[in-house]
Length: 228
Ligand SMILES: Nc1ncnc2c1ncn2[C@@H]1O[C@H](COP(=O)(O)OP(=O)(O)OP(=O)(O)O)[C@@H](O)[C@H]1O
Ligand SMILES: [Mg+2]
Image 1 (cartoon, protein in one colour):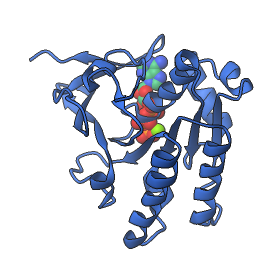
Image 2 (tube, rainbow, N blue to C red):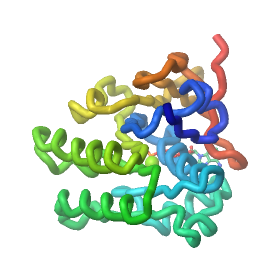
Image 3 (cartoon, rainbow, N blue to C red):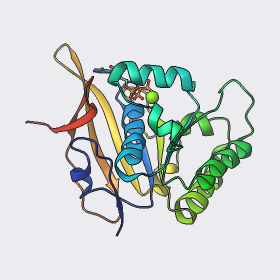
């Protein structure tokens, strides 16, 4: 079995050495828990350590703002992978009346043309919110069949979850997905903390323990065993 490594501190060992690939992963999380940080690091590390091309399709943030924030927060280098064609940022304006099938076609085109092995969609809520729920499955099947099975791409779909909400949100995606990672924020004493857990991962043994999520200026995101 092939595995895709993230090279994110503390993560790959939780997934039994890496995420079985290709696969459709959902990254579900509360606001500000590190979903985008995790996802961009997954792409940057793939480019740096495995020479794999990554595509970040965003419906939430403009490229300029995203790159500036990530660079200021963590000092990530976007220039070299972008110039080398190893990282592509696709920016879709939430204000434009996007035709969803055009968006899918555009994402698929960039992935296939560049032989990308890693794709992030930030976020699935933003992409699918204007569609009737019955259409979700059809759209997700396009991702799964064309990009994942067809092109061997590992896809991370980010799902935004309101604080205190239990349900994943959109309905059917969690059953389609090969893996489900949850990031939560919670309160301890007077402090808001973050934790993450792999809820499901097909095809491999994996940790089912919550880990502390660390966000540091030097390393970006990392996971640490929580002490009881
Ligand atoms: N250098 C840093 N050191 C520590 N924490 C940081 C640093 N930079 C950013 N953060 C934290 O990371 C959080 C944002 O991370 P990120 O954007 O990856 O989260 P997200 O889950 O994608 O958020 P959103 O819901 O806004 O999309 C910020 O709320 C901030 O608390
Ligand atoms: Mg984000």
